Length: 267
Image 1 (tube, rainbow, N blue to C red):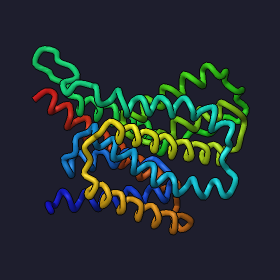
Image 2 (tube, rainbow, N blue to C red; image 1 turned 180 degrees about the vertical axis):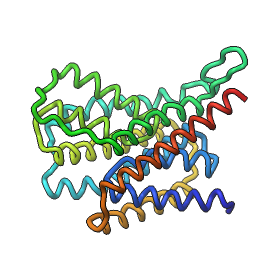
Image 3 (spheres, rainbow, N blue to C red; image 1 turned 45 degrees about the vertical axis):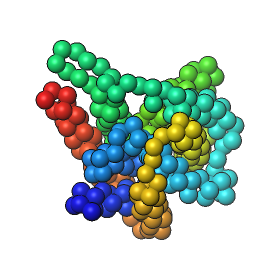
């Protein structure tokens, strides 16, 4: 085991810990850990990430279901289109993208680099929301369902491509369907993230993606252990400060991805 592998496993544990403390935002960090610490292809790492997201989000979803925080009508309206689109992305589309995604002159953009570029921008958006959170607009009128449908399909395709939960995208969509308390929106979003991730990973399995199950089980076990630890101490930590610190950390990781992939593209 190399030093990079040791740091990668520590990263898996810490990512799970932050997920347990904050309830989201950290799953995307697992992908650069998988790619840069363990050398996993980005397209495969996104599939691994979906399984990690599914297990970690399930822990919170079970608790929210017991407390009655999940709004089932919003879950169905926002969830069904996203479930279909994320399955289509993982089962058919992502594995049909050519290894060389784009070529122009002396520049060659590979499939893995393309996914990592999209992921980096996604992480920047998540980090921005963690550092400068926006207040929910409780007075907003419900959006027409055709607009909800389009957004739900787009979110499913996007999260299927980058292998992240996409909770920060789902919360505004859920709030646009019907008026509810923010805690109900976050609980409904987490339930949808759980379902999306499970369906996306099933799509990977049906596409006969080659997976290292021993490695995945080890990585997942550390992430879940971190989540359980985070949940246990969540009430003892200043989550506002932690959210900002992790937001800045995620921003730095995203910038690192962009610099590394742009350098590889140019050189």
